[in-house]
Length: 117
Length: 117
DNA sequence: CACCTTTGCTTGCGTTTTGCAAGTATGGCA
DNA sequence: TGCCATACTTGCAAAACGCAAGCAAAGGTG
Image 1 (cartoon, rainbow over the protein chains, first blue to last red):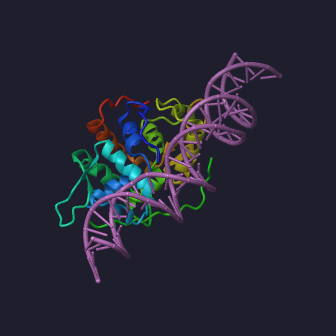
Image 2: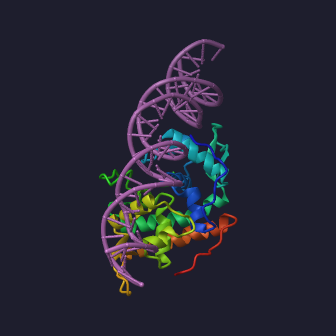
Image 3: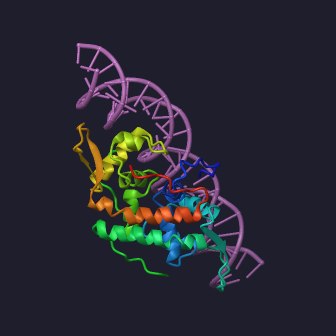
């Protein structure tokens, strides 16, 4: 999948710059899952939207690259690698909440169903 | 440009459904411009991000199709067609504000420079 | 400790979307 | 009536996406 070439900034508008990082159909869904406490690659694959694995790998590396997420090893019995949000990533919670609220108010058939893991 | 086939809903999550409509690099910028009072095709073309005209036409038609924007004729001396947000579109203001605030807080070099027209 | 399964990716390839340039149709104005 | 600005559409190459398959490494099992 495409790697990061030095990316052109379309403008200095904060909306534009945020969209340059988060403006696609998948990135915020991964952030959503992380906010719900999911952290393993497998967890993201199993979300109901069924992201393709190449897209997932690409978005995770970009989230890390932008300092929104980071890799770490949870202290559980198995020492598998995982991902979690940085403070910068955690601060996306307000964005996610406003997006979710707009969807609930304006799109019929939506439902806040996902539960923290 | 690709017209709307009956679109598959990835899940009932309000974040997902919102991203199915707004999740790309351009749509929210058009909404931003409309919130700032811009309404003519030309106005959107002249924003600093320099959207391509085929993308703009496509996004405008999708915004209208989703009931976020509508065409209307302003009562000015010239009777040109224009676009404006519906109530549903206006309610995206909170989303835009949270996105803009996150950008201002987390991306260096961003600046809220655009002024209402 | 050999083998099997799960996990976390990468690769290939056909389809869709994007970006850029050029072309066209329509309305307003002189 | 002719010109110019506006509001698009069209064509095409390049990039991104979506799907299936493959693969390496870690863990668990007998």
